[in-house]
Image 1 (cartoon, rainbow, N blue to C red):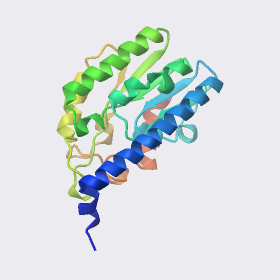
Image 2: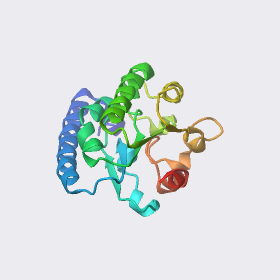
Image 3: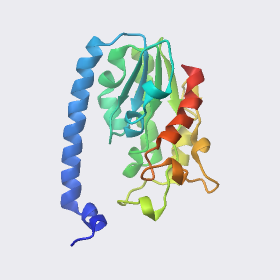
Image 4: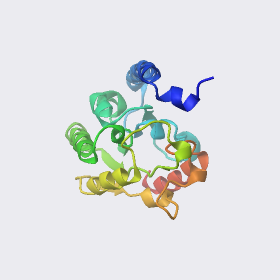
Amino acid sequence: MPNLQDLYKTKEVSLFRQLLLKQDQEKIWKNYQELNQLAEKGGTVFAGDSITKFFPIHELLRSSKRLYNRGVHGIDSLDLLAHLDSHILDLKPEKIFLLIGINDLKDRSPRESLETIEQIINRVHTDLPHSQLYLLSVLPINESHVFRHSPSRRSNQAVLELNDGLRQLPVPTFLDLHDQFCDDRGQLKKEWTLDGIHLTISAYQILSQALQSFL
């Protein structure tokens, strides 16, 4: 019987997984486009990748405004930029919480990722000049071999470099939450992650406490 980790890394399995992922993403974007036509404008939107998608905002956050989760698993900043209408713009929100970048670091440098995130911010400022944008720092990962499924450039060093760049971007509010999720070695706390990247409910509770006052 083949080792599942070795099988996971094969080119054929990787290509198949990417195909399925793209199909799922297209379905989600289509659903968001339809839902946005029915949504109440002027609410608060959370946009990003799977860390946002799995964030139970309606259970953990309280707001007098409608809360919309527009996370899509597996996306990077290029995907977000290409589908900015369905993620953010169509909703015409009053507030935007943006968490993106960890998937960029699989095969893009922090500098390349930063350039795309800056394009996203500029587009939001241009199309939604009255919306308030909160840019979140990219969270740490746990680099233990237990969680390493496939080779990539994702590392805590790359995360730190990307966050250094994000701090310099022209956004009214940069929420630097990175260190709140680190252990004493600078790793995402093991008890707060499912796989080295994605968060447990306990971790989302910490994230919610950090964001609640801005809603």
